[in-house]
Image 1 (cartoon, rainbow, N blue to C red):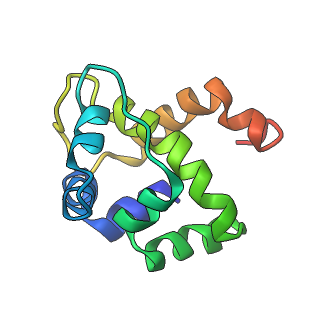
Image 2: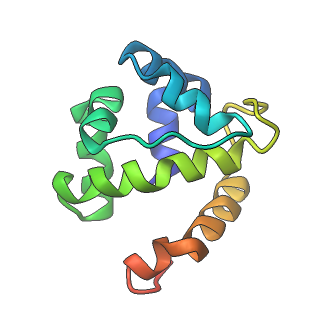
Length: 119
């Protein structure tokens, strides 16, 4: 799901551009930086990614948009943060292995419990 979303928006660089175009550049930049991650609201997530991308993610996960938006708002900052440990985007298109490691780390921090411990 995350891999598909990143491909759809043009990788991490494209994701950053989407947030920039939505007026949320500072929020995205905080996720990439080594400092504190700024929160994002579900409505801001939809504004940045677009309704079509959110619907695609929801469909692939078998969830409703109203369910997926809060999940993305909660966990995407952590995912981006872990994909950019040095405070910059070094690889705009992380490999499937990188994504799996990051997701396992984030899931260990709470996402897995949300989905009943399933990965």
